[in-house]
Structure formats: C-alpha cells, structure tokens
Length: 320
Image 1: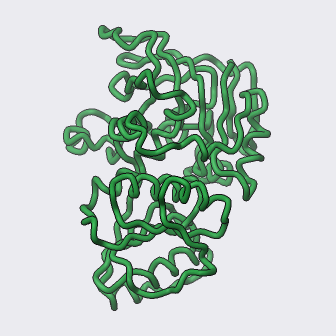
Image 2: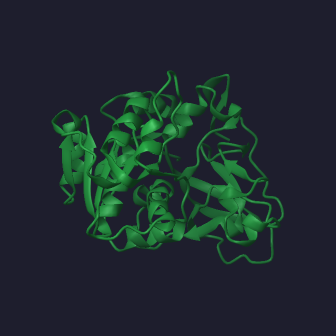
Image 3: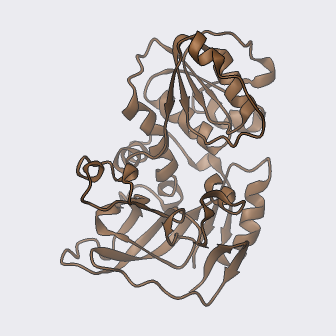
C-alpha cells in the first residue's frame, strides 16, 4: 500500500505491507489526513519514532476483528492513544495517560499516513453526516484545545490570552471564544490572525501588545522559549499559565517569576474526541479557513514541504 514513513529520512513508498487488525481492532480505509507539527518534530528525532507517520485522519471502517461489526461502512475518526485497558488510568477513562500506551504514528503504533490504518474499535467515533472529512480531520487538535476546559474552569469574566497564531493557537482561540470566554489571540502574522478575527475573536499583533501582568489565564502555543518568557510576563500574580506546546530548551531561561508571582503552570495535551465532534456538528466554529492546501498522497513529500512554510496553517492529504 501507499504510505509515508520515517526511518532516518522521510519517504513515500508504494509497497508497504497492508496492516491486519488484531483482536478488538478495526481496519480503516483512510480518506483524509492532517499534517501536525508533531509529525514534523518526529522527522527531527522526536520520540525516536520510526514507521508510518500521522495521527489525524478520517476514514471508513472496512473490517473488524471482533463480534461488534456495527461500525463497518461508517466514516470514523480515532482517538490516538491506545491504553492497556487494565491499569488505574485506563479504568478512569484516561488511556491517554496509560504508562503502557501506544500512540498512533508517534509511539509504538503505525500511523495513518497510508491507505489503511488499524485502531481498537473502542477508539473510534462515527462522524456525523453533516460534518465533512475536511472538517472532521481537525477533531484531534480541536480535542486538544477543549482539553483546557476539561482541566480547569475559566469564569466568563476572566481575561484570557493565547500566544501563537499557528494551527493550534488558532483552534484554541476559536474554541475558547465559542465557549463565551473573554479571549485575545496574539501572533506575528496578520493573515493568520484574520482567520480568528473573522469568527469574532479579538486579536493583536505581538509587536503592538503591551506586556503587562494582567491576564488571569495565559495559553502558550508558540512552542518557543521567547513565547514562554512572554507568557510569564503576561500572567498576573496567582494567575494560571497553560502550556499547550512542548518547548525544546536551547538556552537557559528564568523560572523565578513562577515562584515570585505564585503562578500555576498546567501542562495540557490530548483531549476527548466526542466533545470536538459536537463542536464541529454545532457549527459554532468553522475550521475550513485554516486549510492552506490539499495534496494527494502521491504528493505527500511536497505536502510536508508546504507545511514548513510560514504562510501555511493546515495542510491536508487525500488518499485516493
């Protein structure tokens, strides 16, 4: 089958073995794939992963190795973390924190950048008829945005600022705005900020932002040390800083403000897909303006190059 794999280099192949679903798993014919920054980081050595990339997809279930066949022929998305089903985290519905988990296209599990992918049936959610594949492929990063509200309650009168106008920062801003919060999105690119502004989000260029410790909640989605430092400089004493992106430190930076200002720092990662699907179905946000380009899987390497460009927001790949 056609697939995009990483093993020291990124390459497109046409003869990769088609996966076989294990007990309790489904075989899914992939339709649409989203390129995530995590995919790009893997090509730079993140997690030491080798194999098929990708964890954002839509597809149609073709086969199920199990008794319940109800999803065969259905369009689905899939939760990316596969837990052991037996530990305390899994029993609490927190498979994304299972110490024995595998993660689609990231850790110990082949990804979705291929014609077919396998996932446990319990990880799959049917896509509503009114949600197109080009929208549903955003479910994973949308769920990550909604995870913030699963972790903390933000009162509507509190001041919230999101730093970063990449795909994650945009989705976080759109999501929090759709939930009625007092939100400001800050970034460096007017054309990207305009995507959020057109849906009612207050935006500001970083160069025009007054750096003052006046925000109750600051969401860091730049993935840079300077972004982290700016986030600290915006968080009021006893405020909350939410880290939505991993930051690879290439220099020392000062953490003293966390102690001095008694700032609460929260790491926030994967979220639950069902809530994200409901958000798309309700039409409370429109993700389509985030799509920069759509490539065929035969042009996947070109798609990854397009994803690197500063003007790019979200690049999708279609499987014929």
